[in-house]
Every structure is written in structure tokens, then in C-alpha cells.
Amino acid sequence: MGPDAQRALAKYRGHAASYDASALRTLPLRYRTVWNLSLRPGDAVLDVACGTGLSFALLEEAIGPSGRLVGVELSPEMAKIARARIERAGWRNAELIVARMEDAVLAPNAFDAVAFNFTHDVLQSEQALANVFAACKPGARIAVAGSKLLPWYLAPLNLYVRLHNAPYMTTQRNLRAPWKLLTRYVPDLAIESTMFGAGYLAKGAFVPRA
Image 1 (cartoon, helix red, strand yellow):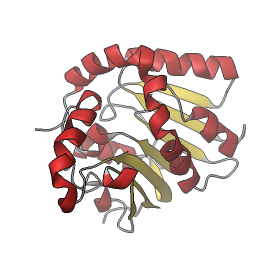
Image 2: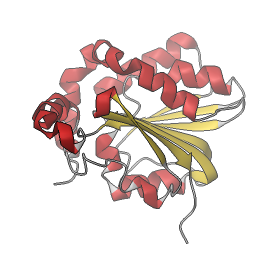
Image 3: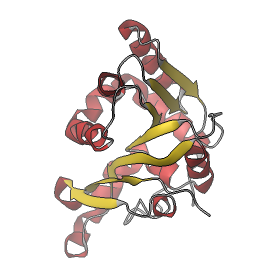
């Protein structure tokens, strides 16, 4: 079964108020994801399924006022917190789009970099990925952090992994290799296991499909 936007809306309606606190455990991976983008002042960066905007300060520090930040978020409740973050910081170069990633209206060939931080549902949607990469410049840097199943020799613990991640995704398709669809756009994707095998980081460069 693929991602379900209506179920996601319901889930994140309940998560929004406590999301920042719950995300503290993966904060080091968020920092490393932004680091892996190799951002430069003036870059345009897309934050996919940006949630409450926890990555915004890191991204803004890297791109500076001459850069451009666009966050796309499905949940109005999560987006409200992200928008307040933008307003408090006074980031005039930041834009928030409240929409499914499949439906977000993005300018073509616009982005130098894309961050996917714990965005499993988006990574399992071919339509969402097609929309993301239609908005990317050739060679755009891609960085990902997420959860995955443990290696075969720790398989008995995977029930815990599935249960732990269930509140934050509506499909567990490809949870053994969540980056499977992404490699069509990022053929050089380099993957690093994290969290004792229950998580991963990935990075590479976008290559337009022929």
C-alpha cells in the first residue's frame, strides 16, 4: 500500500504540538543532512515535508540572505508552527507551501539542493519525486535522513522498528531500502547506516532522466 495523505493529515494533527520535542533524538542526523548538502551562500534549497521547520535555521545559516528557502508541508498544523518560525526570525527569503508534495507548485529548474529529512511517505510516491526533481537543476545536491529496517542478523528486532515508526508514516513499503525510488534520479546515491542500523543517511547528485 502506498502513502495515504488523509491518514497523514490525521496523524500530524496530533503530532504538531509535541513534534519538536519528539524530534530531538534525531537532531544529529538533521545536522548531518544539512551538512551533506554542501550549501553555499545564494543557493536555492527545497526542504521536502519540512514539518515544523526544524531545519530552517540550519539551512538559512548556510544559504544566507541571498539564497532562497522553500519548505513544503502537507499538515496545516505543522505548517503553522513553521510559518511562525519564519516570521520570528524575519527570513524574507523563505517561502512555505502547504500542500501534498505531489501537488506543490514549484518553478522548474529552480533548486540547487533538496533535503529529505525523515520523509518516508514522500520517498515512496513516484508522483511526489517526479514533482521534486522537475524543480531541480541538473546536478542538484540531494541529502536524506530516515529510518529503515535492521540488518538480517537483527531481524527479530524489526517489529519494534516498525511499531516505533508507525506514527510517522502511512506506508512501510520499501522500509528495508527506503531510497529505492530515489536512485532513479540520484544514481550515485551513497548510503550510510546510522542508529545501529535502524536509520540511514544518503547523499548524491541529481541526474536528469533521459
